[in-house]
Length: 224
Image (cartoon, helix red, strand yellow):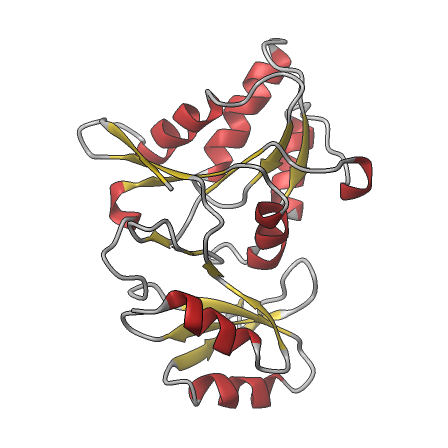
């Protein structure tokens, strides 16, 4: 059986060249990109340095021998390969299902190229079937919850083993069901204007290309 996530991720890795600073995404699709990069680093086909978007991805990369550096050591990231929970045809995204949306957005916004890899189920006409993750500070989160609810969504505190899920930055995530999102840019601004919100999982005008793998093994690339 074809692993579509792996297929798309390995296609994206073809764009990585020696000498690059590479952003490593988080999640089930980005996992395969990191594995392929690690394989190429081990075989000396690639000589790169990387910045990871989560502790989980950093641990995976270090285990594969991929050199990890900090933002203090670079001017910009050449290419970031990451997944998405949803993408529309304008390459606006919903991200954050893996809990790393804040670090993912910091890395994405400092990347010359953001390549999103996914299977065909993630490409949608309108964002919003997937609940939008919103990263919030823990202090007063109940009031932040109420203000998000006032925007017309149904928020839900993300849990992990019955306790509030904590991000790598020790924040909570509220998964907000908005239904179809017809104006993601405006919604992004409204959410981030709420005091207590750190950021949200709408990635607007950040992706450079979307690599989609379909059931038959075909790969389609959509450019911004």
